[in-house]
Image: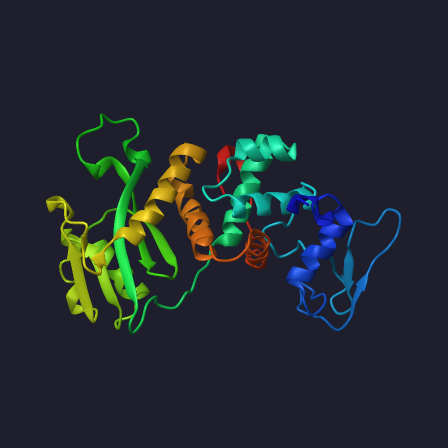
Length: 303
């Protein structure tokens, strides 16, 4: 039986019940005042599905309030389908494909995809690595900077968008959209996001030249001399991450505004970090990240 045949993907009441079980495992909580003692379910022929009222502040709400789904006019069961599709597709799924599959407008599909990416985004994470751990750091270049789009392209990567990624071997990834790949830009990010006890692996680029002073060890491979592996020293793990990221961005999404790149990075990081769980569990993890976040849509795709 297909996963998408589950009732909460096709029935609105079941969809609300499922989302409530994920968001409120211990019972309803008012998003306005935090009360959980006196929350009443409202019923009636003209009452919205799963509408509730707080006995403390007297305000009405559903489980969507206070999440990325708040004020969305798309049926919840269709939004749950989108969450599953976006979290289970290794290289992502385009807004045009969501528009056709869910039978909603392209504009709605595009905004819904960004809502879900916002749910995937995590902040305030502790440093990666630690004693005995190995973290690889590298940058990649993709697309053309918005500021260079109407200029004559010159040789070199200066016109490209730059993505800096940290990947712990056997662990998780963390990606950043940076303005440049200089020592001044890269050093603070690496220092703040990797524990000092970590063994660091990079290529021979100049921005990593002083990294041995910050970590227990720092090994490099010389790609310019076609050296890619030297015993345990390599950056093949992060190159594997970049290969999936680039295939998704070039083959699936194709066009990405630079101001939205950080959300696409959050999407690819999320799927990589939750790669060991089943698709249904990965979708539920994404749903838990929807709480406490909100995106608002304005004309011309500004969110």
